Image (cartoon, rainbow, N blue to C red; front, side, top):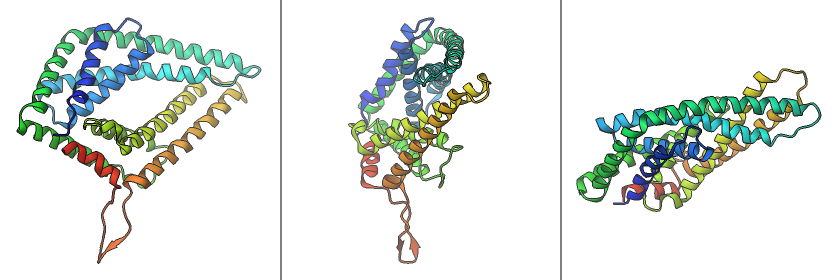
Length: 290
């Protein structure tokens, strides 16, 4: 059996700890950890075909992730806004933008804190019970282990096949593509030494580059709605950085698809070959099945 029980339990363990210590005004690290581990737990439970109890967990975890995501966005955008070049009258624009982001962050953090306090007592108990069940499934019964591994491997292979689409990536479909990349990476990490796989690392680079570009898109959109004076140099710099990040994300994604998951155009007799993923892809996916 190639599934790593520690990778199953890690997001559950971290979530229980975060929920116990979540403050009225959560720190950027708490928000980041909450968002990351809720998404990893969602990917795990959805891939293994959750039972009724796990579906209840998924519902609450999903709501927490979405609220954490809104706070996390403000933290990241604030950091980006602080790094923008300020010249002449643009300092006032920068202050307006930072004040707006801070106000939105405070509002979103309050909502996140309220929801986490509401869910924490019962959700922590459910997570603990789920951890026990997962450990039993993965560690003791061969039939349960094989079933769990089969579900997760099937989900990973499905996501792998979906990475070939759409044929052309652009500004409208690049971010949805990132979701598939992130979900596949989360599943492949469940294998023993899964995080060390070459293909998994490449997926992480793609995920991060697209995510950074999308953050700059959001920051530019907020600034355009907030700053209205003509020839705003801050807006021009934002647009330049957004386009720069888009080109980088597109190139990173294209390189990953070409190297690892592109379909072969060669013919076998009278039939065209199907997708021919590279060896590191098979190494990463086969590690799930053992």
